[in-house]
Structures are given as C-alpha cells and as structure tokens.
Picture 1: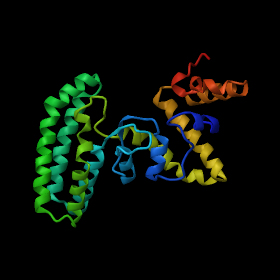
Picture 2: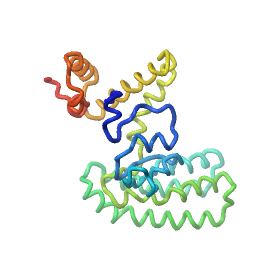
Picture 3: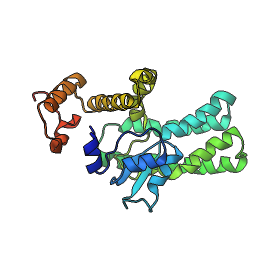
Length: 245
C-alpha cells in the first residue's frame, strides 16, 4: 500500500507511473539490490548498470518461458525443425523442474547443478551452432538472437535455488488485470485509474499471501477510518493481516 506521504519517505516506493519506461522502473526500485526476474524488455537494462544513482546492484534473471515462446512462434508459423529441436531441449529443462518443484532452495540448486546445468550447457552449444548457420535477419535468426542476448540472465536460476526458471507465476497473477484492462477505461480520469491500480495490486497481493481480499480491505479501511497512524503503515500491508484483527 502506498500513500503520497509514504511514497516520498520510503525507499523503493513510488507513485504509479504512466508508462513502462526504464526510468520508471529504476525510480520504483530505488534502494533495492538483489535478483530481479523480468522479461526481455530492454527498458530494464538500465537497472543492471553500475552507474545507478543509489549505488545498489541488481542481477537480472530472465525467463525460459519467453525463450520458449520465441521458438514456438517460428515453429507454429513455419514448422521449422530447428525450432522444434530447441523446443525439445527446453522441454527437458522443464521436465527436471517438474521433478524438483516444492523442495528447498538449497536442494533445488543442487539438483539443478547435477541435472539441468549439463542440459543448459548443451543448449548453449547447440544455440551457437545454429546461429552460425542461420541469417540473423531471418525470423528464426531473430528469435535465436533473442535467446543469445539474454543468455546470462537465463542462467541465473542455475546459481540461486530461490530463482524460478520462468516468470509464469507472476504473469498468471497479472493476467486477470490485463484481461480486465478495458474496464479501467471507465475509471473516469487519471486519478481514478491510479486508485484502481492500487486496489488491484492490493487484491492480487492478498491472493499471493493467502488472505481473503474482502476481509482485508474491510478491516484495513476501518482501521484507517479510526485513525491508524501513517507511521505504522507496514501493519496494514496484506502479509501482516490477521483475520482476527
């Protein structure tokens, strides 16, 4: 949850932005350092630069589902045997991930080192071999170049067991909001759209934390109406919610 006052005083919090520009992501993530899982949008590149204003370092983890999607587009259009082989190799990675899902990060990292690293090394060799044979200006060449350009980020999951192989879980959470985008046209004005975005974010955050959204919103709005201190706003965030409150 953010308020105008809190946004000014709390590192990493900002008002909702009107676009996807990289500077907006950089502002929102002020003070954040660590691993950030993203898609291939070039606007995020500035987040990894050592020259970031706040001096914190971010390491990017890229998404294997996006890599797969690039090859699937070519296969569906052209029936490319090379794209089919790439899809088969990525499917091998996902088969291992399915086996180790739910175990601790440490165990998952060990399993990835033993079972997935050899597959990724082989995929990398295969990728470079195909790129030497295919024009970079062809449709398939562009898709292979995409994977090549994000190769370091695609390997981040091999060095940290907390990192997912893809961003599908987050995308699935965002999808209902994206599908509901037309409803936002009736927000009335920009401020109405911002309020809608805040409420939608709170509802989805409740779902992630196993909190019933209506109960949370009712209790939180009641607390605010009764004068809950802004300095204790962390107590009102979804992951701090206690149904008995």
